[in-house]
Length: 369
Ligand code: ADP
Ligand code: MG
Image (tube, rainbow, N blue to C red; front, side, top):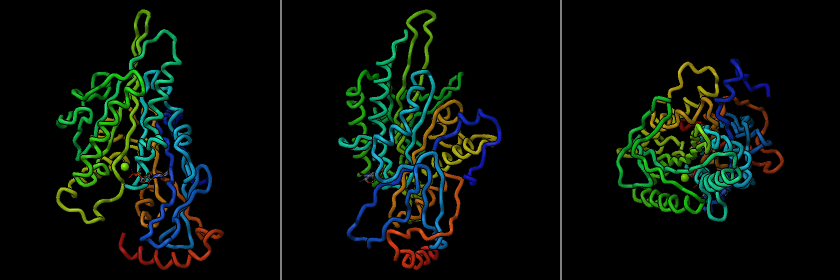
């Protein structure tokens, strides 16, 4: 508790904060790896710890708005982190939900899920239709969707795959818009699916051709709710919900990328790096200038991240040792407050591990990161 720094200036800042949740996916056994056990574990619904690579007898503890352990269901993640913000988009407010974290840690599982374990996107879309149906206070609702990808700092329309890089503009009321981006009207969940599923498949096909493009691009789904008052003066309100599966946060420079890969990495780093600066300045409450304009992703989100918008970042992490440094970096990005605790990582369950760990971490420490 003591490690949390109070936001000094005013209650207003509270509304622009980005809520940060961490989701740890289950340990996945790989027969090729030695069974090393996890290097990170949850402590309670807000705290987790990771072994300290500098000293295996210590752990580093982090505090978040929410921690979702490996047993957490898709429904629980949705109900605790996303559902509460949805009513706002029916009232003309904006919201954004991101999945952040290294490739393989569960971003796509969290956002899309599978047919037997649907993720945030299908649940949020169903919920929006449910909310609209329940509402009847003299307003007419119209729901639209856009789906785009930001790849190499280019904005590409996934609902119209042949289109070129699209410009991002701002209107006189400071709303961000993309002229020329397909906006498909949807009147039911199956309507949504009809557009979304083939567009997602397009993206996946491109990804195998272009070697993991999907882990290097940001997939941005926009659900736009416009409501119009039936009676005079026919007031109109627009609420936007962004649901984003971010590019992998791992540092591609470490994997020895060259040529086009290196260019991609640089571009991804720009958008993710800028996102981290934006989230940082929003959450520290001391922002002089929030650097939205420094990348395509943050420019697009300028009216839906910070200000009066409701934002949630779900940081996905994996428990295996091979993810250790990517996990450590992701946690450090997601939380500015951490505490080094002087105690062995796992006493009860795997008592022999700390000794083995100490040797291996020595090796890891020597690799120069
Ligand atoms: P990312 O999109 O971050 O690269 P994925 O969502 O593709 O990661 O997840 C990697 C693998 O782990 C997939 O096989 C996925 O089904 C599985 N996975 C991720 N999170 C979970 C979870 N919470 N429960 C079960 N399986 C998961
Ligand atoms: Mg993915």
